[in-house]
Image 1: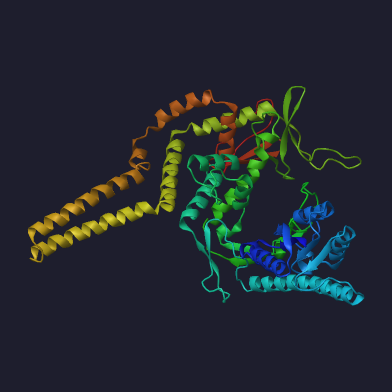
Image 2: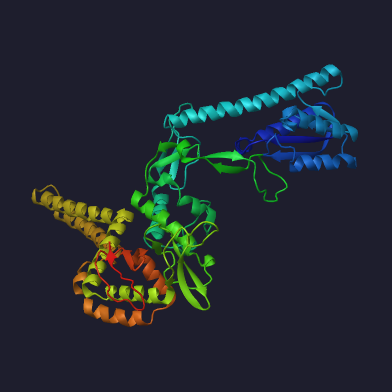
Length: 525
């Protein structure tokens, strides 16, 4: 008899363990023993038995009316479906098309007793599935509440270690090479204020491949990476709940029914301690920059507003946004709108856009023209670069240690020659090798530290830099102005006739200029 075989496994783990191959082999052996010829194989890899919509099963049901085969061979009823109702739907449909259904481990229901037994087996399969799910859920929660890791896949930057599969001990170990890349990504976001797209571009330029080995990092993967709290020492379990998709994406087939995730309240998350890769202050700066990048994204901008994202009402803390009416630029509070019969929630008046932008930029320009400030900030920049270099380049300290060890070895050889332990020829040969090694290490040391010349701080001329700086600032374009303000200013608080500019430079510069308004400015750290 010409037959077709149908096989199904429900998870990626089962796929990896090749349980689908064992099903195919068993069905092939059964067909051979019973003088059947398998003319077609239908295989669904990684599809849940709780779903009836599966690509190969649908193809089998379509082919049933084409006369290709006379029967369908399946390992067991639960491989056809985990729900008894679904089993009956498919079996009855095939029967109406003249196709017999054969289960390897039991004969098809022909008598009422057989139908009852098949129904009971289907119900038991459903019960077993729910029991496994509940037992697994409770077991994972129990592990997490004990502070033990759940799952077997570590985030990028870590290695998953489980020395004995029969024991519960497992942990994350820092992958040094990947951890360097994680630190680089957070530094580009927190310190260099790059957007995620620019970080991807930078990683491509540095020839740093993605976790999947691709040349270009995926935006979604990078976005998840920079939000993971694992990198500051805390992994979380029980963060989300699997649910059916609210807005299906148009896919005909889904491997599981609950393919979407719903975030749970953070109070329900279970923390698990892991080794930290990134410092908490850098992680916090990175999260703030993510929010700022979202607000400042060019996709959200129709007109140029120099102070967007920086102006706030000092009382209600509402943000000021830019608007243009009749070719006049204004900044208005987001809570100024009156919804009848309610009054406006904010009493702050609108601010003339060009006036406040001119005042703020003028004072920033004056502030940045201070020779003393420029030298101080340059010194801090050099020191921060040196610190980051030491953090990210342990190779420099390794080179210095090797040089010190060579010096000690050289002295021991000389002492040995003096004591008569080694001959002059032996001493010359050893010293020659040490000299070559020292020359190479000195070159490596110079290459690693050449970008951080502290003597240069004493050589710079603050007044010369100020002169050149003023020339550059007088012709600067809008995008550069905006970048400078975003780097220097944390927020500008508006309070009727006064504004306080809170910046990242700890100086106090009072402004007495009002220019068609009574606004006064002052810097504070």
